[in-house]
Image (cartoon, rainbow, N blue to C red; front, side, top):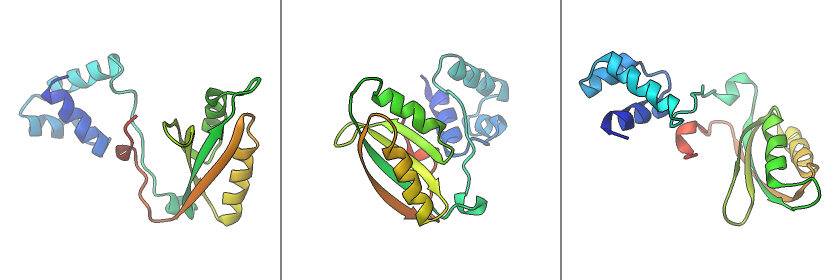
Length: 150
């Protein structure tokens, strides 16, 4: 990975809508060169996609909940199976394995405290979930991909 690759990643991580022309001007390179580097980063799997960051409050959500999940290994249950269930849940915006006190972290957008409680019960009922703890953030907290190193 060279300096131009790092610049492309930095700019697109900050704002996935940044134009190749703008990155090229900053780098002192041609737009075609930036596009070629981007295409290579996609082809080799360094860049796996891009995303839109939404203001959850603008689409009816009042907060974000973080669920720390402890997994139990049992017949048919595994952290991978729990993750697959989580990522299919409509309000879960991030699910990832963790190292440390808990096995999985799931972030979800919520409408209200009742929705938060209901979602917690749904997560607790997933086969293989041994326990959960959670935190709640009111609206106005920015959750965006640039804060996550995956």
